[in-house]
Structures are given as structure tokens and as C-alpha cells.
Image 1 (cartoon, rainbow, N blue to C red):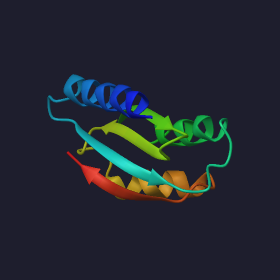
Image 2 (image 1 turned 90 degrees about the vertical axis):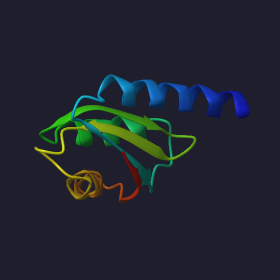
Image 3 (image 1 turned 180 degrees about the vertical axis):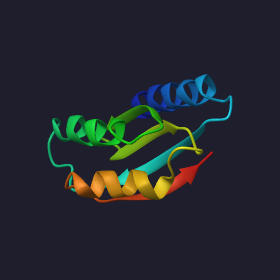
Length: 95
């Protein structure tokens, strides 16, 4: 489990560093994901939000890490998108 968490953390940090020029990264806690295919639906919903650059969703941790342009969208819009897809979420962190 520690190895998986380390790999995920490294991937999320790399994603954040790639978008450091004026972009933000939000970590969302996502509920209702009960199978390995659910993250695909969550990711698709997030990627439809204008201003989202990338969305990475992990089934095991129930977290989504989203790189977005704060001039075009907000963490609230991201949680609205996941809820609209049937997966309510809450903001854990914004950088």
C-alpha cells in the first residue's frame, strides 16, 4: 500500500509542477465510486469543465487531482461536475 501511495503522490506532484505557470491543482474526495470503472466517468465529467487541463482519478484512494485554470473555472465548478455525474465530491486541497 505504501508503494502505491508513493507512486500516486509522485504522479500528482508531477502533474502539479507541469501546470505551475498560473494554473491551480485541486484535490477532491469523491464518493459513490464502487467499481474500478467509476473513475473513468468522474474523469470524463471533470475534463468537460472549461479550463480543466488534466484530471486524474484514483479508485483506491477515492481522490481526484485536477489541474485547472482558475481564470476559467473554480473548485466549486469541479465538485458540481462530479455531482452531476453521480459522484458527489468535496474539496480537500487547492494549490
